[in-house]
Length: 77
Image (cartoon, rainbow, N blue to C red; front, top):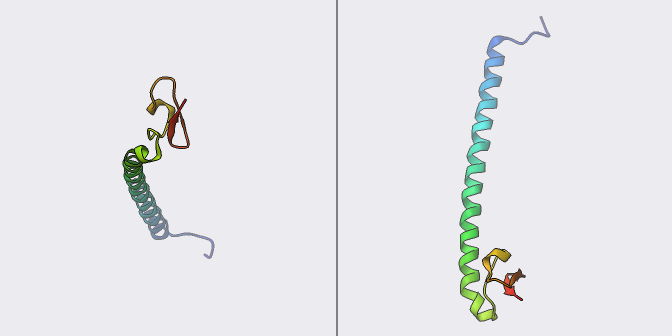
């Protein structure tokens, strides 16, 4: 019987798919944690170099004072 798939093969396929799914979730969690760490480091660098560049460091306009907006990482009027 050429075309039949045995129960053992189906179980093996299910196990392989489960392992791949677990690995993918683990990798996505690691990528998210790394992304957050890089974001924090970036904010730290911007905060330290903002005074040198002559502007307050920002990522979004909400980071700036009222009347200012974020342009190229600096709060500007």
